[in-house]
Figure 1 (tube, rainbow, N blue to C red):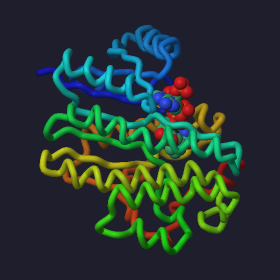
Figure 2 (figure 1 turned 90 degrees about the horizontal axis):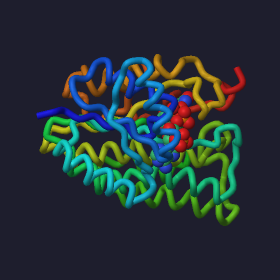
Figure 3 (figure 1 turned 180 degrees about the vertical axis):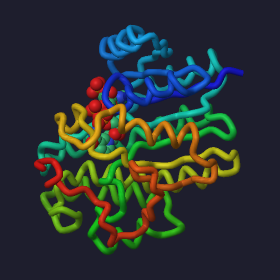
Length: 287
Ligand SMILES: NC(=O)c1ccc[n+]([C@@H]2O[C@H](COP(=O)([O-])OP(=O)(O)OC[C@H]3O[C@@H](n4cnc5c(N)ncnc54)[C@H](OP(=O)(O)O)[C@@H]3O)[C@@H](O)[C@H]2O)c1
């Protein structure tokens, strides 16, 4: 049986480098996917020039039809998925405070899309498979400074409803003009992205609980500050360097790492520590 790996949002940036690394190191089919066919096919052509041949499919993680079509295609052609890397995301990172419309867009792409992927692609994940959700330093619980939400998100009985209500609380605050910068670290900069990524890392814990019985691992990770279009070229690492830990996690890491939050240097961190110094600081953009 052919093994299958899928990377969302992989026409450029870290996702593209993960696909390239999988093509070198994974014994199986690797899907490069893109929401835009022109950009996706250009990325495939770039890999072909280097002698690598990914499978390609259109995939917009916010579009139910697109995700369902992709799921049917993979199911018919290969029967299942062994590795899924949820990498697609957006960030208007140069704007520190966003309008409601921009906030909603970031939360839809970076958080709510996970439910569409979960509904259509998770049933295809084979037993013993690995799912990696690309989060951020913005996804560590220490980004949240509101005591009520720290307590609720730290609950060992955390539910999807808790996380959704946290996300909706932020959306409502931005809509009503009651957003309080002190509810988040770093004076509430890029709060939409922090909320979405905290949501992703919290959801990872719940997804792990649900998939445990099939020995599927679900982890979330921070890839480092990386020089991609998302950061307008600012960062400590290039995309190929940043792809190394995601590749390690899906190919080599002990299968016992489950439901964890992992730093770009492979450290498994305590996600629940609200006083930790792992949160994103906007000053790193200007250093
Ligand atoms: N770069 C960093 O310093 C950094 C730090 C922490 C976390 N991260 C995370 O790392 C991951 C990769 O980021 P990156 O820096 O490589 O960003 P990037 O270069 O901007 O690439 C993002 C990718 O996601 C795709 N995408 C956006 N919306 C999508 C949608 N609705 N459906 C499918 N694909 C979509 C983009 O496609 P288009 O080309 O069509 O826009 C692009 O291929 C993200 O999850 C990001 O949040 C990055």
